[in-house]
Image (cartoon, rainbow, N blue to C red; front, side):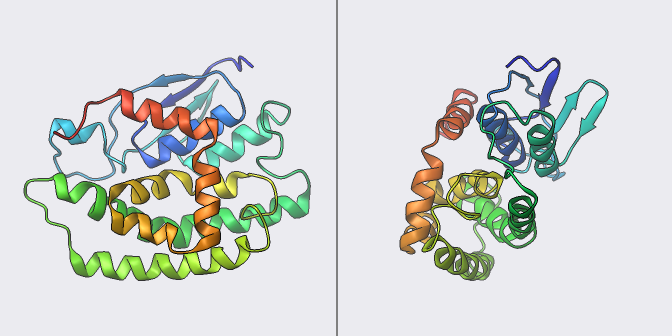
Length: 226
């Protein structure tokens, strides 16, 4: 559907921007992507890294509404366009939605911090001249993430997805950082493959068309690290 005036500002490499783009593709909504650089970190990055910076922020505009939190943007898209695309993305009843909200909070509060740190240490630090991966920080955040994924594994032994048997924002929200970790190194990949149900879940969610389109956009621009 052509939803008049949906605009996303930011780079697809940003985990926040990627989360919003995936939601837009799931909802089958037309939008305009304006590729601009907005960084949370003040450090100067070389040009070839800049466009791949996972910490870049997202800004979303629809008419006179502006939202800068990626999870809030996804909620807005699901509630404003309930009949478009994937209708079960934000649950279909108040109980489902309450469960979904708990998952979104868990992802934002407990999964995002250790996964963001690992994304930087495993996927980006090795390519920066003056930055070396910090083994102590990697180990500390690996431990936190392993603990979270252990809980996920138990839940995923009972359901196909985190909030039940349908793909929802609970799963979608985990995709951007998980993708970077899994593709960063064998060490990162093992965090997800070591747990049977988590491995199966990640394989399912990362092969969705909506996410594949985002990965394609991330690869189109810019070039490789070499």
